[in-house]
Length: 245
Image (cartoon, rainbow, N blue to C red):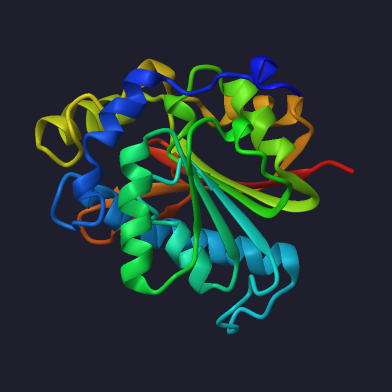
């Protein structure tokens, strides 16, 4: 596949929006504060999915030892670094060069070796990986179907895909778009509610790309528990998938 024929999935306006926030990605009280609260919840699901898929011991510190992981839309590396600490050989790709610069700086300070790349995922010349992750990204790309095809192209036949995204519901419009942005929980202009995918829509797109969803859970919020995994998918959800036999 030549560079001219590679699918273009990056939305330049979206990349510029997130690139402008690069300096605050690692500040738990800054513009990415919500991601810092969300990341541990996602990691609980991810760790469970890894253990289930690869048969690793839930008590093992390095369940991804000897395996490769690719985080697409990695931002400044909030998920790449935990994946590296789980033992994976990690590559992170993001549309915004500013985010990649911040990711490289933080990884160096953290003593982690992570291969960070900026640009279209399809233009990086990467091979297939054991684990492909994509958190809160698909709602920001130009062509979701083409984007998923690129994720699949980088997934080994026996690999694991992990993906999260907001649901398109009245609740997500109220709490994730209107309230969260107005209250400064996420930067203004982060979300376009019309681009959110329902679980049914995303499952269909994955099926068209040859993937079967193995598990799906909601990420919900309550005053008592904060953000947590739940059967309620009204706001956000996370899933694991693998290639069908």
